[in-house]
Structures are given as structure tokens and as C-alpha cells.
Length: 483
Image 1: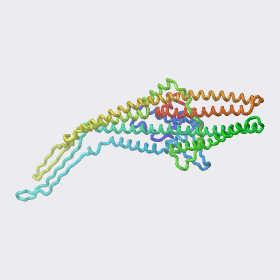
Image 2 (image 1 turned 135 degrees about the vertical axis):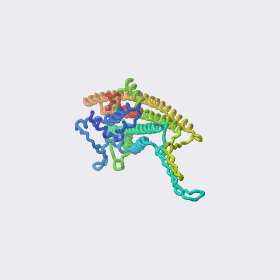
Image 3 (image 1 turned 90 degrees about the horizontal axis):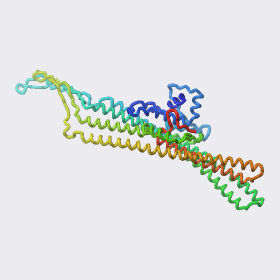
Image 4 (image 1 turned 30 degrees about the horizontal axis):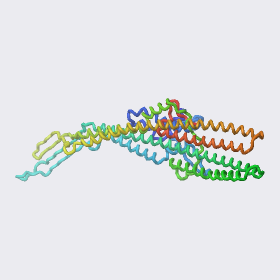
């Protein structure tokens, strides 16, 4: 499991490996948790991947793993697993690529902030007057030379504020990118499970249509024998036609779901003919109060939106400090030398500075202060919103899981009744119409179970989105597993 987790961590975007750089002090405890969260998103939803990696004894190397490619040379429909969909999304989705470019820009700005601004470069002024004449005699005098070297001095500590602001902005960009990657993976999970639901629904619709066809054939033989009325045959044939007309509609819904999945993944045109091959992956952990409290506590500390808001507060505070520091004028101090036309040499000290008379900078300080309080309130509301959304999503998932458990129990009961009816039919104690009717009820129960299974996957995706991906981790050692 450790080998698989390390292998998958190398397959995630390279930018995830740089999270330890420039993160706020209060968010360093979340860095390791979020690395594991993204890894678990790939591990948990695809448990067979872990088994295959361990079984084959994958050897980690320093080289990056080969990019997952989807080719459609052998078949017009290419098998697409959930793991491939997740990896393709991380590698290809345009929004994520743009965000990684923004992160590089923020990192460059942070590195640039460690250098002093160009306004603090020293300056030198040289004045040479070689043509100096005596106003009375007109004689040529000695050359007048004046040299002044000035070094600006920033005594307000503004450079420290610049570094803090750039560091916080870089951290906010990192967490925003991470949040977008997690949301993209969660959306892929939702869309993939929707495609799986559409595929399974096609199978059920075809089975229902086939059972209705068998029932219509049985009724036709009974009508020919004069046992029942022809009206029953017409009704049965109409229902069969209605069910068969639903097959193309179900297939179109399936292909539409695949198209939506491919659009979100950012697949190229040559790979547009794909087919979802995995089964449903649903959480098997029961929603308990202990699990709810654990997720709420983790989300309040390490939700990407919360940590990004904390970084933005740090950036606003640094901007406030910078504006206050910039109110103090920058003084330029340095030696000066002058040799005049009479041959007298002067050595001294020169100093320059601005007078904050026209604009003292008080207004910009007040503006930065208000921005800080705005971001502080936004952080507070973000935490509250995360808590409310997560509580609602967990409650909804718990109710849907309970309904799914009841539906599965009902399906098992009906399957038991169908087995008994089949035994009675084999013994000649019932007719074929009764047997087909019971089997159709079983298929309808399976369809209801399929609907609820799809609902569980959607609710689980909402939990992941509300928790920022932390729904994957019930605790450090006990993940929120899927089956």
C-alpha cells in the first residue's frame, strides 16, 4: 500500500510536489493531509490499481511515469477506466493547466520579492565644468568637478512586508490550484458514475423489453387457444413497443454522459469514442456522528477554500503593513566630493528625501486596512459555509445510503420469491405469465436499486466537494473506502 501510494503521488501533477514551499505557518499541518487526500482520491476509487501495483512490485524510479494515452486504433470504442479518467483530467484539463501557469507566476513574484526594488539602487551624479573663465581677466580657470554618490535607505521595514505579501499570495495561489484539482477530480468521479448508471440502465431496459416480449408471446398463444381476450394481447404488445422505444433513448443518454465526461477531461478529438468499463464505486462506510465530527474538524482547518482564505488574510495584512511602512520617506545618503575652479577641494555628506506634504499615504493605509477586515470576514464566512455544506451533504448521504440498503433488501426478497415461483412453475403449479410477471417485478426492483446507487454516488460527490476532498479520509488510518 505504501509503494502504491508513493507511485500514485508521483503520477499526480508535478506542481503538487512543491506544496511545502511558501505555505503559511498555520497551514503547514494541512500540507501532508492534502497530499494524501489527492493520492487517496486515485487509490480509493480504484482499489484494484493498488493490488496491481503491489502484485507487480512496481519499482519507483526518478523518471516521470509515462503519460496515459487513449488510442482508438483497435476498436471504435476505447475502454476508459475511472483511474484513466482521473489522470487524463489532471494532465489535460485546460483550466488546470492555466492555474499551474498562474502558480508559476506567483512563485516568480515571490522570488522577485526577495530582491530589493530597483528604486533602492544607488545613484551617482557627476558634474564636470572644464570651461570656467575669470569674469574680469577672461583667463581660463581650473576645471570644476562635483561627484555625489547616494544610497537610498529604507528604514521602515517595507521589504519584510513585501516578502510576506508575496509569500502569502503564492500560498493562496497554490491552495486555489489544489482546490481546483480536487474539484476537477470529484467532478470526473460524478460524471463517470453517471455514465456507468446510464450504461447499466440500458441493460435493464433491454431486459425489461425482452421479458415483455416473452410475456406477449405467451399471451398470444393463449389468445390463439381462446383462453384470454385479444385485448390483453394488444395491451401487452403496446407496452413492449413502449419499452423498446426507450432503448435508443437510453443509449443516447449514455453517449451524452460520455460526451460530458470527455469535455470535462479535455480529451482530444481522436479519443472521442470511449466507453466506461468500471462498475459502480460507492462508499461502504456508515455515516456516524463520530465521522461527521471528524470531517467537520478537518474541513475547518484544511479545506482548500479555508486555507486559501487564510493565505489571503495574511496577504492583506502584509499589504496593510507595507502601506504603513511606505508612509515613511526613503532617505538617500552618501558622500559628496567637489573640486572648484579656484582649486579648493570639498568633502562632505549629502542626503535627499521626499516630504510627505501633498500626499501622506494615509488614505491608502485606510484602504488596505479595510481590505484586511474584508478578507478576515470572508474567512469567517467561508468556514461557516464549509461547515453548513458539509453537514447537509453528510446528512443527505446518510439518508440515501439507508434507502439503498432497504432497496437491496427488497430486491433480495423479490429474488427469493422469484426463485419460489420458478420452482412452482417447474412443478406445474403455476403458469408462465405469473413467472414472467414476478421476474419483471424483480427487474423493476433492480432498477430502483440502480437509481438509488446512482444517487449515493452523487451524494458522495457532494460530500467530497463540500469537504474539499477530505471526505476521502475518515481518519489517518481508516479511509472512506469505496466498493
